[in-house]
Image (cartoon, rainbow, N blue to C red; front, side, top):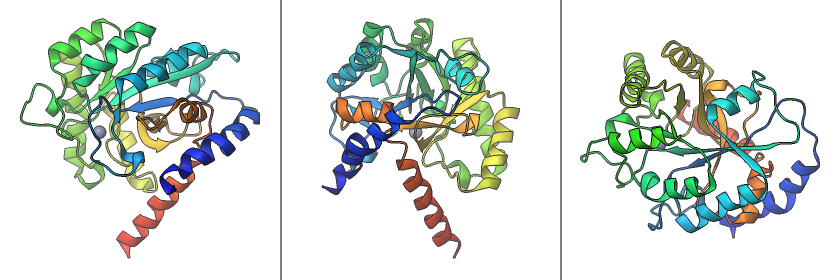
Length: 286
Ligand SMILES: [Zn+2]
């Protein structure tokens, strides 16, 4: 029952509330965060941490976007609209589709469904795991550079998810710089196009101002223009351009929950996310 509490509150209470509220100026865009499109069983018990969206549920979610006239933007285009560098169409509904970890099932399962609906997506690669059969995240296969080049030619964007997928806050400055710069360079070499976006691995330590400032400087100096994090909610100009919020999506997202998330019904979860990070940080330091 407690597992379903966020679903009930989002669909029945917060989504209707968000629908009634008028937008305060700038664009607010849902950026969806997927990991794996597969029917594999989950290893995590709490549905919030599930990695898998089955191909059937993913297809139903994309159909929902199409049926409801969502324009699926590249992350770069969305960032321009959110931060006021491009004009937003007040009548348009926008969404962005992203994938973390560069799993191979993106090529096998997700891409054909994206193609069917004519939608683009951004995939964030942990570059040390690409073309390396000895390294796997969550026991899953990763994309190869051959597949990545092919996907890029078909309109899929690629960004960095670091090189080795470390907890960056626990790394020293030189390692952080390497993770950020090396991963971008290798993607650019392989796809022959700029890789300007970054996705922070693991929980983003937003309560740590010194760290986030330092990381922002490193990202900008390293050639990045925008990025996303695991902070929950729809993206808006209230948030730093390097760490835009996203909406975690998996097989638990039936269409009512999916719609609630798109319409702002899940944005309230960020308050809980931030409070729990602050409490955990206090525990650590005391
Ligand atoms: Zn990751």
